[in-house]
Image (cartoon, rainbow, N blue to C red; front, side):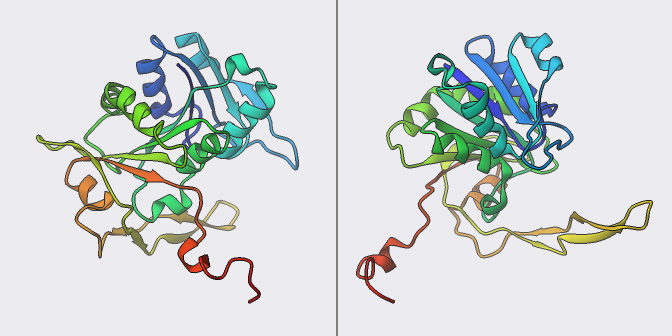
Length: 251
């Protein structure tokens, strides 16, 4: 397959390199991910070749001054220039350094990049590794690549969803790949004010994770127990049940 790899940690992230290392020998791999420093100015989006991956693995790799979704969109609509021979068969966004469980899906740049691939009618997968992991990115990539043929087959059954996959801190001895509902994850005291050298105030995201009120078959609970969770995500978020007898009628 031709596989486009992206994420929201930057083109230099170890999660991207782990995927490249485990996929490039059997697939045609391209990387298009945010540059380590955002370089967008006004309507300009800068693109630089990322030599480290290009020279180590002999692949195309670009650092793009924009969001993760920007990186996918610009590669598909700009760099490729409608070259159908290079259009990817799959988008993998990851391996993200930190989980994307429960409510995280609303804000996730990793999932956002996968959504952009999906919008372009490409099979798309978001992959994340939990916070403070015992597992390495290489171990995650190894497990993912082993499961990839089955994941692609499943994803191909229904073009209305993409897959959000989360790896735990450490795999349980009897771990399984488990389908999971999207759970609930909240953060306490998430935004902390700091001052830079000039005295200007900025905020960093920290705080304690609160996992409460979750179903036993939610992604939060199953991943916290040492399993790999798979959650299908649809882009259509309108409440069709409510609209069933209202659509087209005056408010």
